[in-house]
Length: 396
Length: 115
Image (tube, rainbow over all chains, first blue to last red; front, side, top):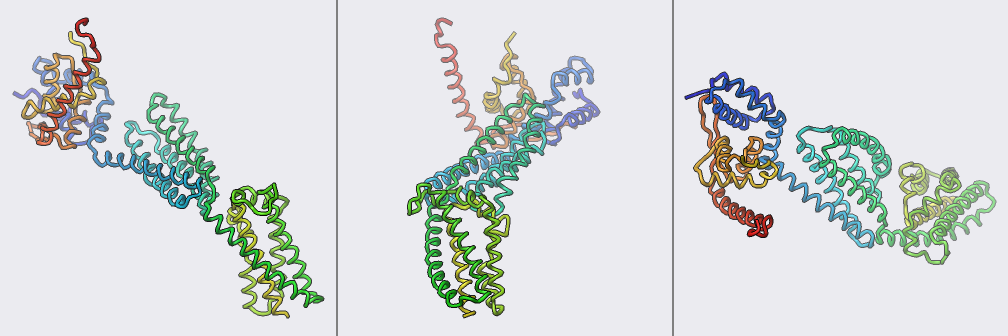
């Protein structure tokens, strides 16, 4: 005996659909369930509408939406697998990052690759999945913007220090401006959404913990940003070799100038060269002295990695401008003496120091450690001597 | 009147209840399960569909139960029954749960003679 008419069933279908069940399988099952409940009431003699309304009064409206949501999550194996992958990449990334930082502090080889792999697996593995899953898991969707902003902020927080430590380009954008802008955008959006829904503390907690954790890790990375011993040794040998070659050419050039004494052109070149060489020597000595206040003859390994010396000295008394001016003057005075295009090219190649013309290169230079700065400055000096030699021999 | 068991308490044991019922019956549909539970618990447990169906569907996704669709007029009814895997898994799960109930009993009632 059939108590429910087809119209009744159609009515239930459309009402349940309206209440938020959109998956066909679940909808069929729900409708059958509700029909069963109502049939009992109909048997007792109630009419359809009262029975249906009574039943629906015992069920909160959100139940249907929640049910479909729960159902989707618990049966969606892809989603479950994604969560597993998320935890895995998060774990591996954190371990690699931690290992990299430890290696870096100890000046062991392999620190760079560990940190790069760690940060990349967090940035491109863990974080996207984390934000995606925590977004999907919410029944009432919060601002998507918040998730995207949170993700971007964390990317910058992680990539910035990494780029800085690895001396990669774009450090300025990633390290200084990116996080600042994003944090300025993210915090208001986040706080507003928190205060709107004070009771949803669970996801907020995870959010805060993750953000704090990653923030601290990046701070840790930053403080541990020592240059590896490999780099120090390499720069050290370059520095000493440069000094040697500079010395050889300087002696030769001095004797050439002595021979050419009296020529007007030579006098300007000589004056410019002396001023420039003195300036560079001065800068190098100041940097060494800054990092080694005790003024020992040999620069200690520790102070070779000094990160402040170069910035400090270059920022002092317009040193950068001065150096740049002197370089230009010297270069021009040599170029006027060049006898053919080939020689011009040689001079050009030897005295083209992008380092001080190009803003981003320069800000990179300022972050050099003492020994890196010394290697760079001494190679400039070497190039100056070589180009001077080229011109002087051709005039002779 | 029997004390109502809250949904929070039920959450962890709902799977076991469903497995037990499916192990004892050839096949059941959702509403039938809620009725049987109410009957067996003498009215203490009233399963809502919001709690029941996610459990059933998860069991299906994991391969422990299989479904059969039957058309009843305009309505479509879905029957659940244990798969082969499900049967052996249910047996071990039920044993585990009985053990759990025993332990809970010790903990909640350490001096039975005084109770």
